[in-house]
Length: 333
Ligand code: TRP
Image (cartoon, rainbow, N blue to C red):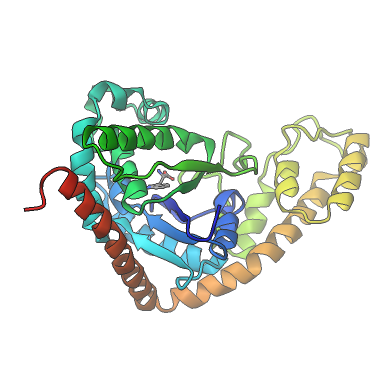
């Protein structure tokens, strides 16, 4: 990767961001902004594809997500933070791409398929939802992004984007669109505090970046450990133990953590102690983030201004791509 390569990441504004986002991607973005051109997209149009009846939720969370970004250290002078709907060029690109994607292909996207099943959509799936990978292809190609840092679940989007790129370029006989590659994050997914699947924005098993000490304390207290570890003297299991999964992600004293695990396995170490250690690790990492977030939340108008400025910069980039696309389609009247 060189410093001219463009990177794009994004989040749907359907809830505030949690510590799973933090270790899985936000930390990486803060590093990446030092060495390349990065766009970070708040995908409000994509969020509406399955929240048509709830625009208020999407609206509120645009600001929440923006404050999370700033709090973890994304710098609007180094990263271009963009609100998707403020870049209408992306919607126009989507419209043209839809003509070179088949319904059969849309229905085959494994991530969309899984989401449709989970939401019980069946044939009544909103057309916008079924086609959101095409809109995502517009996001990626609109900014000519070469790299897209993602988790496993987003790989089908990258694949579908590259299909659109190849089809477009070959149909219209010029290299207008740029292929992209995923940057897979090396961290493993953080489980939810309930130990059930992954941490989610809306599944009631997340620790949010904005949670205060008391809430974090409560959430850790409720966390699942090893159901067989009843008395302090019982030997405990590390595998599948959510508290240890979190410690693996957040405890910087790896040697101390290994010793702790050995003691836990032998027996004689209570969950309360282990949870206390987790609280300290998490809290020392989250305290400065929370403090910065508190500052930003006092001036939402200023945060909105920052978003508008970033989106305007993003519009210039997307307008350039759109002009080339329109020319390829003989729409440059
Ligand atoms: N689909 C992504 C998610 O659910 C969000 C997203 C929208 C995105 N547009 C993007 C991610 C472009 C990367 C690039 O998290």
